[in-house]
Structure formats: C-alpha cells, structure tokens
Length: 305
Length: 305
Image 1 (cartoon, each protein chain N blue to C red):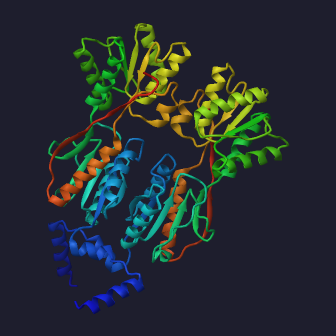
Image 2 (spheres, helix red, strand yellow):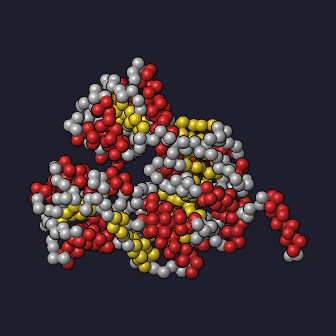
Image 3 (cartoon, one colour):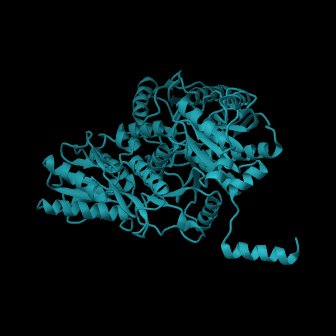
C-alpha cells in the first residue's frame, strides 16, 4: 500500500472511531482470545480468589473470560461446555470449592483439542493439567510452628472425614508430629464439621479428655475461632495456656477471632494465576504439558500462638 | 432445498459432529450474544450473589457472560470497556460493593449504542438504568418487627457515616420510629465501622448511656454479632433483655452468632436477575427504559428477637 493510501486509511479510522470487529478477527485467526472459566459450585469463598487470580493473569492481555457457573449440575455443565465450544474458546479453566479430585470434562465433540486446566479441584486423570494446594506443606508449616514455639501436647480438630482437605491435613499433621517423636495429645483426630459450633464442642471434648493439651491445630479458621471462643469462656488463656492455629487465612474469621488467628494461607489467587499461565502456555504451544502442579502455602502468624 | 439434500446435510452434520461457529453467526446477525459483567471492586460478598443472579438469568438462554474485574481502577475499567466494545457485546451490567451512586461508564466511542444496567451501585445519571436495594424498606421492616414484638427503647449501631448504606438505613430507621412516636433510646445513631469489634464497643456505650435499651438494630450482621457477644459476656440476655436485629443475612455471621440473628435480606441475587432481565429487554427493544428499579428486602426471623 502506498504511504498516502495508508495515511488516508488511518485518518479514516481516527475520524470514524473505528475499532476492529473481534468476531471477524477470530474467524480469520482461528483464535477467539477467550477462555472459559467454569466454577462447579457457585462462586464461593474458595473459588473467588482463584477466579480473580486467573482473571488477573488473563485480562492483562487481550484475553477475555467467559464465566460459567455450573452449580454442580451436570446438565448445566454440558450446556455451558457446548456454548464454550460454539464460541471456539482457546482454553478452559475449571475450579471448585473442594480439594477432592473431580472427573475430567467430557461428553462433547472437539473438547480433545482445547486445553483444560483444573484449579484447586484436580482432575482424577493424571494426564490432565491440574494446579492444587499443598495440604502436606500447609499441615507441616502449622505443626512446625507449634513445635518451634515449644508446644508438645497438640490436638487436631477438623472437618468431615469424607472431605479430602480434612483427611489430608490430618494425616500430614500426624506424620509431622510422629517425625518429631510425638503423638496427638488426644490420641486421635477429631473429625466433625467446618463450623464454629463444632470447634466449641470439640474444644470441650479435648479439655475433658486431655486437659494438659497445650496447642490445637484446626482444619479451618471457623473451627479455630470456635476453639478460641470456648477457651475464653472457660477462662483458659490463648496462647498462654493453649495456642491455636487455623487454616485458610479467611480474614473475616481470622481477624475477628479473639485473639486474632495464626493460620495457613493457601495462596488461592496464586493457584488461579498459575492455572491461567499454564493454560496460556498450552494454547501457545498447541499442546498440553500434563501433570499436577502444587502451590505452596504460607504461615501467617498472629496473636493466637 | 430438496428433502433428500437436506437429509444428507443433516447426516453430514451428525457424522462430523459439526457445531456452528458463533463468530460467523455474530458477524452475520450483528449480535454477539455476550454481555459484559463488570465489577468495580473485586468479587466480594455483595457482588457475588448479584453476579450469580445475573449469570443465572442470562446463561439459561444462549447468552454468555464476559467477566471483567476493574478493581476500582479507572485504567483497568477503560481497558475492559474497550475490549467489550471490540467484542461487540450486546449489553453491559455494572456492579459494585457499595450502594453509593457511581458515575456512569464513559470515555469510549460506541458506548451510547450499548445498553448498560447498574446493579446495586446505581448510576448518578437518573437517565440510566439502575437496579438498587430498598434501604428504606429494609430499615422499616427491622423497626416494624421490633415495635411489633413490644420493644420501645431501640438503639441503632451502624457503619461509617460516609457510606450511603449506613446513612440511609439510619435515617429511615429514625423516621420509622418517629412515626411511631418514639426516638432512639440513646438519642443518636452510633456511626462507626462495619466490624464485630465496633459492635462490641458500641454495645458497651449503649449499656452505659441508656441501660434501659430493650433492642438494638444494627447496620450489618458483623456489628450485630459483636453486639450479641458483648451482651452475653456481660450476662445480659438476648433476646430476653435486649433484642438484636442485623442486616445482610450473611449466613456465616447470622447463623454462627449466639443467638442466631434476625436480619434483613437484600435479595441480592434478585437484584442481579432483574438487572439481567432489564438488559435483555433493552437489547430486544433496541432502546433503554431509563430509571431506577428498587428491589424489596425481606425480614428473616431467628432467635435474636
């Protein structure tokens, strides 16, 4: 094109405020510059930071995020999946509240050519790309911190045994204590619910059965908050008599707790960000690099220890 | 087309697993069947139910939702807005955490031809489409409920005075009591923070300055939870001596509170749903019906009253 022609075209673009039509570009390039973000259980406390981390990594470029909420309903999942395929998404991120593995997306033609990354809830297929939290490391950080501050009679109160998060954190905490030559002060893990009320009830049980307990490691912050409430109401000092560690670093719970909670932060936004980056790599390379990537936790120390 | 030809095309579609390309359809129809969903402050406790309500109303059809999180940053807002325009979205829903009015979207060519609905955070321009919560009705429900259960010495503890939600609820609660011939038991509204710690401190101030108070209406559930904690720790019965009403129906707070909170539910998912329906109407009609639509609250009665 002659420079004058080029100049006139650019002037016309300017005058008309022309913006290229993304649909025409997508037809031309075969790429839609969109990614599907599927949550399987609404948008909750756990999936929100994952979503935001992913949106942040993707949205900084020209990639847009199509939000799909399946609410754990397989008919909705198929509906959204069909829609995403019709829109020729470049890739899909799947996330959910639970850390239990979930079956891979399936049941729709063409899916095999679209990269999929599972964030927080890994795929049951080890050949898929998953990004998960490090429950072993998290439980280790909590146990290590309690041991380092001189605690030796440690109890563990957590959620339902059928949740992987409860089972895994408990197992790794027990293993970590055993490596230090210790057993749980109560001789067993207290499985129950992810609630403050369970934390209060279980704290009472611990005080009754092992009154010399000097620390409680809890499977989430709600349980830990219940434990601190029970201790305070029975005149037992925290951390003076009993130190308390939570899990999740959910600010509403951890900061409102009296005392504020030392807790484990899973770096959920980082899980979302890494899921997005792995997806972008797979899109650019034209092939997936299978396997599970684990994101380390960090210890947040506050007044409860 | 002859029936045999049609039959052969459909057979080929079936055999090949063909799905229409949405981008080609969009170029043809001039519609993208996508809607932008912009949140101005991350995805928090308030915007999440609004988002889900909107996604539910839109996603049931063939409309997809492009998620844009501006994090209150005007550069990010312009970036997302430009991207949404390039993608020829059929409309935009804007939502945020605060009920304070916000300036309308602006600064980009072509925006005037795209319908925009503001959900929860209304536009400052009354000519725009906004869907808001009914703070007057909500405060009225709380006051009415306390009056109906025989309370006459009512205090009000709420968030910062520079938040519209705190100011509006306080003003309407005071007006409602005045209509019943009553004034606030403490003679004034206790403005402070949206936190449990503020609820506890303010409850102490109320007990000191107006010990015959028989009810506290709180601007949110965190404050109300702080109030119930302070009352219990001072040996004052709730609701026996003092009834407590919260605001938000945030289940984590309202149910974990001792006693569980009577509270006002803003029906946030309904705000999102109605915003989506107004947007669909405007898209179909080719023109917006300006004005503010108010969504009623509902009273949720639990053990604190």
